[in-house]
Length: 351
Image 1 (cartoon, rainbow, N blue to C red):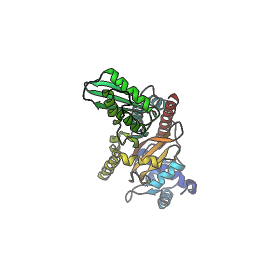
Image 2: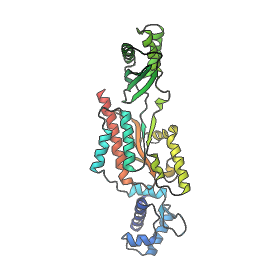
Image 3: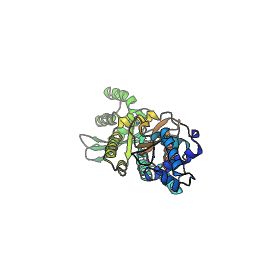
Image 4: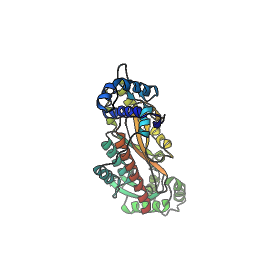
């Protein structure tokens, strides 16, 4: 159903019920509407209109003699046709900018902080899909942090930083660390580790690397550092406990636990990118519309972010009950995703 298929009376009553539900979470009855809505109709006329809206699939009654609540179809109609999206306050905008505008911090950290910020501002769980880490290498550095323990700092061209601890058989002199890092930086410039690995192994095997034995061992250990599933990208989720705050019934608790389980499964969550692969702007998934969660009662507001080539490389958003403050959270998610995308574009310009 389209919103223009509702007459003015139906539209007014429907809007009041949805607004009340989003504010209180409680069913709305005809007496409440006649008393508080300012709609000049009798309770009987209001009941008839509510019955028509229920027949149209926009409202339902949770139990006999209760008021009405919007269905998922009703919420979708409201969001797409009636809701007026607000703007961010100056404080909210400044808070998001301070978090998302990188000032020398690794992008990993910026994404972590952005996710935590969104969770706090929205009072929901939040998530960010980090870009794929199968990127060419910008720089590698080896730093000895403890006896026989080396920290490998791998800076990728997409701005992500991989820190890996290496266990070595003996302490290595600083010149060995520098020699191994310089060799790898020369070989990996503009390439992924996987693409350069075979050539490096061949040079070491044929003694063409001009590295001493210790540096060769360090290089070989370094090549094996990145996790083999890192190229699939990963999900950062924060604020999961917020999903349990409004849970009252046992059935709702079980659904909340099931959702939390989904949030822990990287393979499920990465399907989100497929769902919004060609999306523009903020996407809203209500309940069972979301094939990833496929359970009623939850909403996901998510927006993709792009790199300098306008390719979607990740997404950021919030997850919570369907009774969300959509008009406030939508601009929050939209602004955050645009700042994150701008950060990636600026980072590429500086390379």
